[in-house]
Image 1 (tube, rainbow, N blue to C red):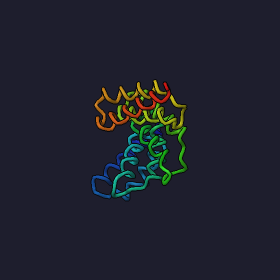
Image 2 (image 1 turned 180 degrees about the horizontal axis):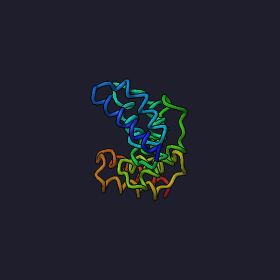
Image 3 (image 1 turned 120 degrees about the vertical axis):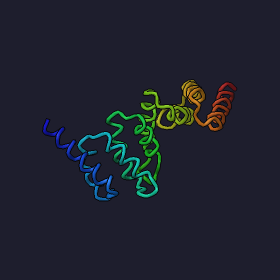
Image 4 (image 1 turned 90 degrees about the horizontal axis):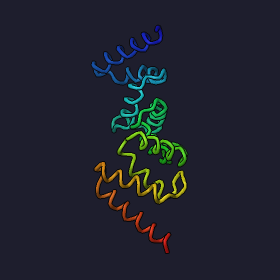
Length: 165
C-alpha cells in the first residue's frame, strides 16, 4: 500500500510539472515511475522518445521493452520494430518476431502485416507461407494500408508459385 501511494504521489508531481510545461523536469520522475512498473509512464516515455522533439530511439527501446513486458500490445509492436533497427541496438530478429507475434495474437492489427512478412521472409522464424497468407488476410480484413497489404499478397503468391514448381 505504501508503494502504491508513493507511485501515486510521484504521478501527481509529474502531472503538475507537465501541466506547467516543465517536461524536462518531469522526465526523471517519469523514468522513475516507469522503472517502478507504471505502464502509463512507460508508454508515455516511448511516445516522447519517438517524437521529433525528444527523438531518442535507444531510450524508446528501453521503455517499449518495459511496457511490452507489462503486456501492452502497442509496445510489443513498437519493440519488435525497434529490434530490427541497427541504429537502436544490435538487430535481434528472433526478439522482433516474438513480440510482433505476441502483438498480433493479442489482436493488435498493425502487427498483422509485418508478421506476415516475417513468415514470408523467414525473419526471426522459419518460412511459413500458410502463416504469411493467414496474417496477410487478417491485415486486409482489418483495413491496414491496403496498397502495402496487396503488394505483400502478390509477393506471397509469387513465392507460392515458386515452391510449387
